[in-house]
Structures are given as C-alpha cells and as structure tokens.
Length: 371
Image 1 (cartoon, rainbow, N blue to C red):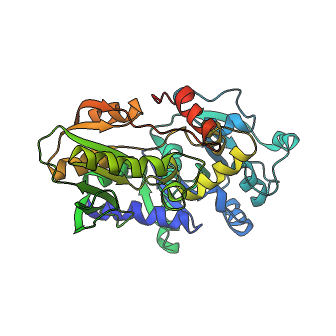
Image 2: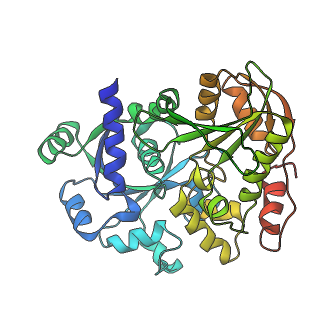
Image 3: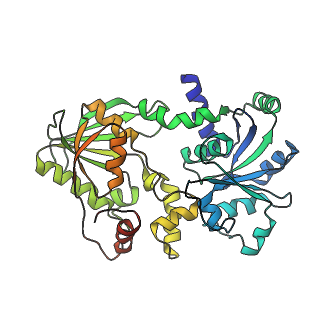
C-alpha cells in the first residue's frame, strides 16, 4: 500500500515539474502531460508515440468558457477534445489558461476536433484531472493513448512513473487518514497568550495542517472550533480583497474570550486551488469577474476544499462534538459527513471594506454564506 501511495506522489511531482506520467485503467492506457506546461518538444514526442491522435481533457466549466459546450454539466462532467495535428504547444497552453499573455482568438477554436463528454469519476480522463488538481495545476491534461504493453515498456525504459486510475481516486482519502502529529509547541499569541500549535503531516510529506489550541479545551465537547483555510494574501499580507485576515484574527480573539477552543489552519489556499491559481483568479476578477466565475473560467469549481483532514485532526485531538464558528453551511454539512457532530453553528462575520464588498456579496448570493 505504501509503495502504491509513493507512485501517486511521484506522479504528482512529475506533472508539477512539467514531465509526463503513465496512467492505466481496466481498459485503456495513456501518457499524460499537464496542459499548462506542455512544450513543443513534448508535443512532438507525444505525436510520435501514438497513431490514435492526441486529446485534451478539461472540465466542463473551462469547456463552457471557451465555447466548446453551451453550459457546464451539472454532474461536473469532463470534456475530451480531439487535438488537430496543426496546433502547437503554445496554442494548447493558451487554450487552458485564460490569463495567458496571448489569448486564443474565438475564431481559432474551429481548429479543435470533435469533443465528447466523459464522466468526472472513473477512467483515465478523470484521474488525469485529479492528478493536475493534486499538483495545484490548471485542471487540464493532454492524453496520448497507448496500448498497455507499449505504455508499460515506455514507463520502464524512460523511468516515467506509472499509476492506475484507482490509485489516484483513493489518494485524497488515504492522505486524510494518514495525517499524524509531528510537532507541538506553546506559541503565545497577541490575543491568546495561552496557545499551543500542533502540526499534522500527511504521509506524502506534503503541506502541513496546523491546530491552534487556545486555553485548555477538553474533550468530548462540544468545543468551539474554527476551520480556517490558509490565505497568504489575507492572513500574512493583510490584503483587503477578502475577509480572511479579519476572520483569522477575529476567531483567535473570540475563542480566547470564550475561554477555550481550537482553530484548525488548513493548507487549502484559494479554496483549494492553490496560491498560483488564486493569483490567476485575481487577475480575472480585475477584468470584471466575481470570485465564483473566476474559478470556473480556470476550470475549477467554485470551492475545491475538502474537510476530511479537519475531521481527522479533531478526532486525533479527542474531539468529535463541536460548536463550529462559520458562515458557510457547507462546512457544517461536510464535517457531519465525516463523522463530526456539529452541535451549533456560531456566526462569524466582519464588516466589508471598500475592496471586498463585492467579494462578500458573492459569498452570500452565490455561495450561500450566511452573512
């Protein structure tokens, strides 16, 4: 099992470095490239490896944004597009990245081949998109179909990592359950001098999640808890584009005032899309899109976060009943699905400023936040 996890971890790293991986399911095999980093040498190599033609996999949100489909599928379906031989790597990169310096002209979309809708779960296409998301890359991939023996030989001869779709689909849950405590220390805070930080790490050696224990919370609860997704721009730089910094510092103050509680600081920047993609979304917002539509233009859903790590951290700390400090009903539902009892939702909102008023309005009107 550990070796299989390492295969997926290595595959994610290869895609982030711009190198391909081999993917298998029960019926097909393919060499997979991250679309955003594809270069001309790789595209030439890909074309030489198959006679079946190349295809681009993207989400229905991105497909709708570039006019391939009239509207995204309600079931989060993916779209597979046949790539004509005459398109180059730069054109593909521009097609999947709405913030690319040279945008693909509307008229050039006629160069795309036929497209089909494929399920968002199961199969190589879905696994390729999941790998890209794990790597905080744009959710788009170029697939080079190969017979299984050819794919196996290519992986062996080139040292390219080879994984199955099933391994990829299991990876997110496996990582959440593999979290373990790796360090803890007293860290007096400006608004909560009696605070202790506990670090949790998944067994892929990836980003750490943190639990800030304020006062002396005692299980079983219900204990006051805040789930806070990291926000480099808001938490550290004091950005006025969001309310994250206010929510972080306000939660620490409120928990200290209540006597005790826990703040979970989750490594889910940009609602789960990563800092680079959040900056891409910001540039689209500067062009007039709201936060939801900016994410959809990139091919992501409005909110890509998951809360299994939070539930696992709470269980390891001894808490399965909480009072959740949030304006987001989805957090309540998600934690309950993960086995945590939410005895009460505690409101947690702050006044708007001149820069984040539209952001907060989108939260309320399109994301269902109770502000």
